[in-house]
Amino acid sequence: MATMTLKKLFVVLAAALLTASTAVFAVAPQKPTRIVASDLVVEYKTVEIDGLDIFYREAGPKSAPTVLLLHGFPTSSHMFRNLIPALADRYHVVAPDYPGYGSSSAPPVDEFEYTFDNLARVMETFTDKLGLEKYSIYLMDYGAPIGFRLAAKEPAKVQSLIIQNGNAYDEGIDNEFWAPIKEYWKKPSKANADKMRGLLTLEATKWQYTHGVRDTSKISPDTWGHVQPLLDRPGNQEIQLALFHSYGSNPPLYPKWQKYLRENQPPTLIVWGKNDAIFPDAGAYPYKRDLRKLEFHILDTGHFALEEEGQTIARLMRVFLARNVR
Image 1 (cartoon, helix red, strand yellow):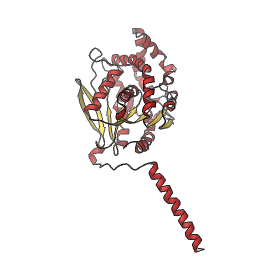
Image 2 (tube, one colour; image 1 turned 90 degrees about the vertical axis):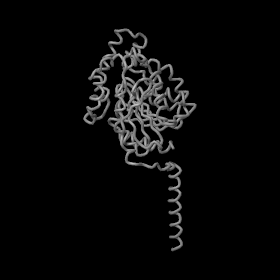
Image 3 (cartoon, rainbow, N blue to C red; image 1 turned 90 degrees about the horizontal axis):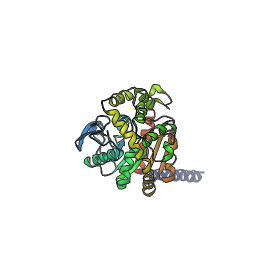
Image 4 (cartoon, rainbow, N blue to C red; image 1 turned 60 degrees about the vertical axis):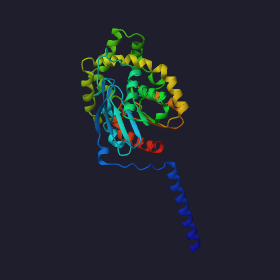
């Protein structure tokens, strides 16, 4: 009887050891990063690029892996105000504002070329000035065409992608929202431009934050309270109209970006608000065609998924980055 008990004990211990070793190999522990209290404080900085002041938020130890957060329209790095501290104990987190947005310079359209090519150029210079040699990129809305330009140009710098309602496929813009914008691409007349101005009103801004969410009481009015006064600045509507038109330069680049994904296979996390009327989840599924190292999550929320699912996205990012970035 004692012999049988010892055998059973041996089997149990062996099974436990096997389970533990499997877990270790599944997610290898990260090299510890020395954290000091100041690393966890979000800092608000500017860097000069071609005569422009580019504002950015930064937190986390500079010796840790970098996560570059690229915001969408019509917001700024403000959209990452809660995500940054949720990652900063383990990652070096950087979130810039593009020219024309947030607290960055916003020169008038006759003094700065508001195109996605040019915004990507400024962001490339930004990463160089900050000495960001490798990074993971969070791609959302306008951040997708900017980030994909960076990644396709210098794929060796990109350690992983986090894609949240950021499009790279025709399926993602084949919907009613884009019909008048596509007409504006074809014919940037004053009449078509005036139709676009409706997207710059307080009502439209509130709609972007609240449409498709489960509970609007969970969406802070600080969001549109931050965005709308910036959109209402003199000359800012012309900036936004220029970028609405420039967005038409992105779909012709989709095949190039898809080729980048196929050839480089960056580890990718998709966290997509399925109720987004601008970039619905029809744009999420095509990534499965081109990516093998893909973690795929469709969330029951809207366009600005961080507002309602911020804790979920932060948790998924931490697990994903721990698996894929050193």
